[in-house]
Structures are given as structure tokens and as C-alpha cells.
Image: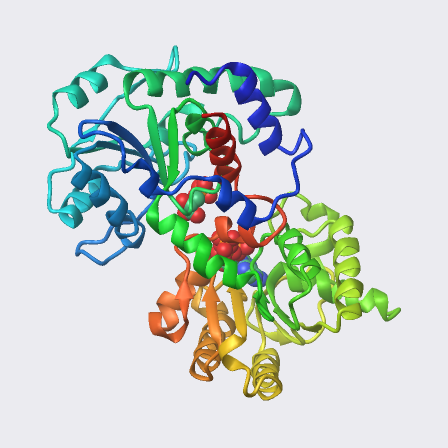
Length: 468
Ligand SMILES: Nc1ncnc2c1ncn2[C@@H]1O[C@H](COP(=O)(O)OP(=O)(O)OP(=O)(O)O)[C@@H](O)[C@H]1O
Ligand SMILES: O=C(O)[C@H](O)COP(=O)(O)O
């Protein structure tokens, strides 16, 4: 089915929040999107385009840096058994000024190893002057035997992929028209069946949003469907939530989780905690200086927290307290010179929680365990983010210590889930996989699913499935 610029425009409006979205739950999205097994009836030789989770830093040995690739194997094997010709496409990293975009060569090689078959990489596959697929792609796939698997070179090498990211409302129609051409060309020259097996591809990329609209059939891959239906649905019920990191827009996700009414305890650090700390002081009629974090001279910095976020934090605190939620916030901080302070002065910046906070968090975990004694098997904890600039050993202590606390919760019988992203990296660095119940292979997607915004590719797949 051709996308038509209007349908693409409609989807772009929904994704950018310009048009009003239906209020749907994660379960509603999952119900409306077909699963991989729905493609059982397709004959051998059918070409299937797979949006794959190829954003992986593949290490030297199998098992190193390839967890996202391994997550795709079951779905690809299903297609191989059916005799489909499968074309995997997706992104690796982001375009950075003066740096060449990453190549998927290592990813294709590792996928080949995991599948036990050759996985050729198709280079130079898009004509950017027209946003159409080059003819050699069709010829290569056409000549390949059934069961073949290909990888298209990094889709982010082409500007069309991320054209929606920064598009302003008045530019949406033009961007949608170009992306519709791209999607239609993939449908005409590559495949009319599309599978999303890219749990982490939560950005507004054309490959995971507009492209499915051009397809006759769409489906959610086995791993992705299972992750949403199992662990993600369970995290919706989390009573214990740890939220940290530097991105202040995570406040929206935490607010949505609070409004769901299940949370009993929130431990926070990083920017979110700074906003909550300030809000807590304001509610108590006190002052708490955030240092450079609230200084408008730093408004262009990632750690800057604007006044409207403080107001939001105040609203969240009040709503949370009404529900009986306990907010556990840092009481000391590590500064740039590694000194530890309990209050910040103008000009100060915090890079980690201090030792008193580490002890406080440990004590609060103990309190939580005591309170939930006997109910451990039905209690869920969700952990997102890191407590400081942990990549620098001077500021890793808070993050490192807390990974041990996750083990403590798991050992007590509580189900502990870790959102991917930096929280997942910290678990890898300071702990063992079995210290938690499950670690997601995605960060942003998990926050979207649990938080305030729907996952863009679920919105797109639902629309594609309804129209197909
Ligand atoms: N004071 C701080 N507290 C927390 N993180 C900080 C701080 N200062 C710098 N950072 C950096 O912020 C990054 C983590 O924040 P971010 O909000 O991006 O979390 P994340 O885990 O990547 O999120 P996601 O799970 O959404 O991918 C780390 O690279 C960390 O070094
Ligand atoms: O690594 C990730 O989190 C995903 O691949 C998404 O990457 P992006 O934030 O560059 O879209």
C-alpha cells in the first residue's frame, strides 16, 4: 500500500504531538499490532523488511556487545525457516559533526555468526536526491536464494531517516511527503512486509515510523512483543522506583508513573532529584540553592533546570504525598573538586551523591524490605539511570554502591527491573546480570512505554495495521 503524503503527514502530526492522540494504554497498542506468527501464511520467497536493533557496539567475541543482535535471532530464524528473504535495516549511533557515520559491517558479520549463515551488507542503497532505493538492491535480493538475510548499511547515513526529529510544525507536511517517497520506494523495490524487532529504536526515525505505513503487512518481532507483554507490563505495577540521570525531561515519565497510582517509594538522584529537592524546600517555605543547575547563564547546558520544571516537581511532590508516596532524595553531594557538601552555593555543580546519601538510600531499602515482608513475590522495583557522572571514577561511588542495593532487593525475592541506557551500563560495570530479575536492552523506549509518551513505533505499527 502506498503511504500517500497525507497519511504520513497524519502520523507525523501524531508523533510530534501536533494532533491530539487517542489516550491508549500500552496494552491497547499491543492488542492492535499483529505478532510475528501472523506472517505464517506467507509463501517462501517473500521478501521481509526487518527494522532491526542493530545499534550495537559489537566486541571481539560472540556475547560481547551483541545482546541486541542476539535479541533478533529468533525472529530471523522464523523467517529463514519459512524461506523468506530478509532485509534488516536500522541505525548505528548518531551523525556527529566532522565524524563519519558508523558502519554496520561488524554487525552484519556478527549476525552471520549468530545465525550460522552468510549475511552480506548492502552498501550505498539510497539515492538521496530522490529518496528512492537504488536498483542494485532489488537485483541483489532478487538473485538471492530463499532464506537469505541481508543488512542495509546504516540508515542514519541518510538525512531522510531523522528528518522528523527537529521538524517544526509548519515543516511537517514537506518532511512527511519526502519520507512517504522513501517508504514507498522501499515497498516497491525491497519488501511489502515489515517486521519491527528493534525494541530500542524509540526515536522518530523514518525506518521505524513512516516506513511501516507503506507495507501490506506489519508485525512485531518475537523478542520485542515478549518484552512489552512481560517485563514492561510488570513494571507498570512497580511499587519501588529509582529514577535518576541528567535528562530533566524524565520528570514527565516519573509524573506519569506517579499518576498511575502504584508507587510507594521513589529514590531519586541526578537532575530529577535536584528539581525535587528544590520543590521540597519551596513546599516547606525554605530555600535550597541548586548552584549552576538553576543559573540561567547555564540555560544551554544539559544539567540546567528551568523554573517550569521546578514547578512540575512541586506538583509531583504534592500529588505523590497525597498518595502516601515517600520521596527519598540526596542529602549530600560530591562537587567537581571531589569535596562533599550538604548544601550547594551559586556556582557549585554536583557530580555524584555523597556518603550520607549512600547510607540513607541503603537504610530506605531496608525499610522498604521490612514493610513488604511476606509480599516480596508480588513486589516490583524499577530502576532507571545513574546517580552521577559515573564514567569518571571520582564520581562513580553513588552509582556503584546502589547496584549492590539492587542485588539486595533481588535476593529478598523482589522482582527488580533495570531500564537499559546508562543504568544498564552501570549494572554491567558494577554487578552481574543475575543481580536483577531483568535488564532491558533499551532505555528511552522503556521510559516511553512506562511514562508519558507512547512509543513512536507502536503508534506507527498500530496505524499501519489498522490501514492495511
Ligand atoms: N550529576 C549527575 N547525575 C547523573 N548523571 C549525570 C550527572 N552528571 C552527569 N551525568 C551524566 O548523565 C548521563 C546519564 O543521564 P541520562 O539521563 O542520560 O540517563 P540514561 O541512563 O542515559 O537515560 P536512559 O535510560 O533514558 O538512556 C551519564 O552519562 C552521566 O555521566
Ligand atoms: O541506543 C539506543 O538507545 C537506541 O538505539 C536509540 O538510539 P537513539 O537515541 O540514537 O535513537
